[in-house]
Amino acid sequence: MTALGPFPNPSDAFDAADLDALERLDGALASDVESHGYQLTLEVHGSRAKLGLSGSLDLASADAVGGILSGPGQLPGAIELAFDGVSRVDHRGMELVVAAARERVQHGGREVRLIALSAPIAAALEGLGMKPVPPLALHHR
Image (tube, rainbow, N blue to C red; front, side):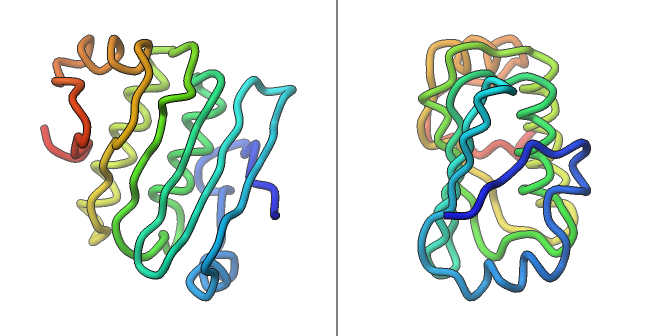
């Protein structure tokens, strides 16, 4: 397993060499970042990736997720987000994740879908005017 984050800003999440290595990866990576209150897991299988978040969705974890979604080179294919382990949401963090998903699509990336969500994530999505029913394509306005 290889650690992911915490990242000071989204562009620090991955560089092109890291993403080249991920393109050849078929398995899982994990990060346990207890001091920052969140845990990220990333599974890459062929042209699909699944990014899981548990703990808090705040500015720090949103930066990490945003860096993975829209960082240099980007992950190949569609990305599924499993946020069913999120226990606390900062609404600005949710806004940043949605913005990163939209940026990914606008810059030629594939769709980002929320496939699992917790009650706090559902409430944050409702606050953004989105219907919290998975699978939810986060890049649609």
